[in-house]
Image (cartoon, rainbow, N blue to C red; front, side):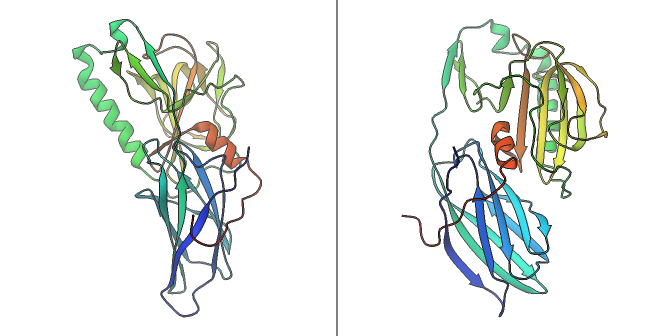
Length: 296
């Protein structure tokens, strides 16, 4: 179900006479932790630059035409419910318009599962600690590297034709020890299923990692990054440019898993977001109207 977003005007400060008028429209399947919100920003006159900040992060907009821009906002799993400011700074030939909107994030209850598993799935052996830390740091660098070019276009598509579960954001307790929230979508795919790029981008990593096994990381540009995990084989190399639908590997059960499936993680300016939300919002043809005024 499509939801009208409660984005409201908090303030609009003109810092120069005749600054370009600015309007904002929004779309999302919901406004909750883990979701993606698309803003469409329109001005009466062409803009030179546009900067957008929300949730203490910068999100990179892209131009649709001289007077229309869009930007995807990622609502991280740890974003608290309540009102959050979205700051928009536009410039046009030295004139600047600064405005803010209020985005109200609703609470979301993620499921918790309690499992008893083999101890090896709870605590990795000490001799792999250095490897785990090094791989985590490499991924953190990739998450934080915001390529300013937009490499993706159009709607993101499923990487496999199989059903995705609703495990994103779920919490697991293994042998009474809490684990990190599940930061991706899992697809119930058999071993050997072809995995295709959900959108265009550049391969940043293609190798075996301790937790995610045979993995592929694609930079889609504008701070949007995908990771595909537990593959049985990898069919791309770092630096390769892929188009939507290109084969990047095949489903497997490598890394720390108990059975074959595809795990797809998405980071947006570092925010952990549900890949299903990304597919939803990039596939929507229109935006919801914004109601002016303060939120109740």
